[in-house]
Length: 143
Image (cartoon, rainbow, N blue to C red; front, top):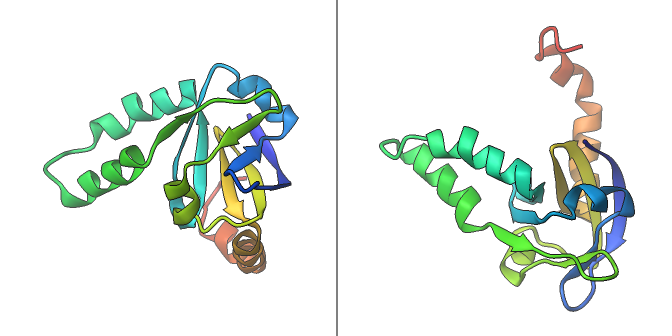
């Protein structure tokens, strides 16, 4: 399970160090793709395959929104490997999509990591931290 928030720097070659505590879960391979809210999603290979087989493959190709979402998730996906320093290379098209610059936040969200531009993450988090009570109110019986 991925939890926590970490700040790292993206180098000029698009390499990003993944926090050491997550690397063991990702050692068998990982997939990065476009995420929601203009971040990137990083899945273990097993979680990615589960997402495809249990959810994305069941979307109807007869419905435009479902086709569009499958295209969004799958066409942007890229397998990534770790170098000796625990870094992955984020392709330029994904860095551009998420508007990633030098400072990056890696947030653990149970079955995936989210990779955010630091400024965008801070704005998103500030907005949602203030709205947390009303968000929780709309999620009946969650806790």
